[in-house]
Image 1 (cartoon, one colour):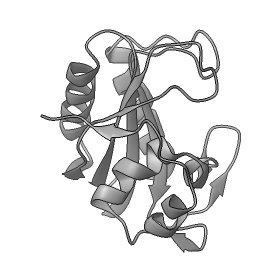
Image 2 (cartoon, rainbow, N blue to C red):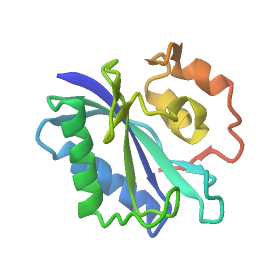
Image 3 (cartoon, rainbow, N blue to C red):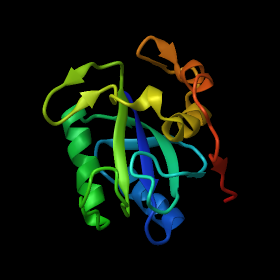
Amino acid sequence: MAEAYLGLGSNLGDKAAMLARAAAALAATPGIRVTARSRDYRTPPWGDTEQDWFLNAALAVETALDPHALLEACLAVEARLGRVRARRWGPRIIDIDVLHYAGAAVSDARLVLPHRFVRERAFVLVPLAEIAPELVIGGETVRAALAKLDRAGIVPVPP
């Protein structure tokens, strides 16, 4: 079993319910066991800022799947939950990103690990720091990477 970390996001419909459904669907996927889940965080949109706010969360998983199979499992969950890819960084009912996989370095047309923007995005690092502050990505801990970023507008949402 390998340890991996996933980022979840939603900014359409019932965002909290969608994150919960995604986490449950991942937990029910053969070869994936969810070991930790962050709180949900309200975050401002990033990239394309002309859209509604997001809810973001992070999951720690143990998986028997290789990195590409884990990505495919995440994409399958997105599809089952109604994800439509209309525009880059645009609104989405659910987004599931593989952020880190047991220290693996992958770079191909389908997958880049660790996720190429993980250390640049506070909306990813804030929930990830809740469950894995000492995880090392790109030579620095999640906590250290987050300390360099502006966290304005990122707030935990009560359960």
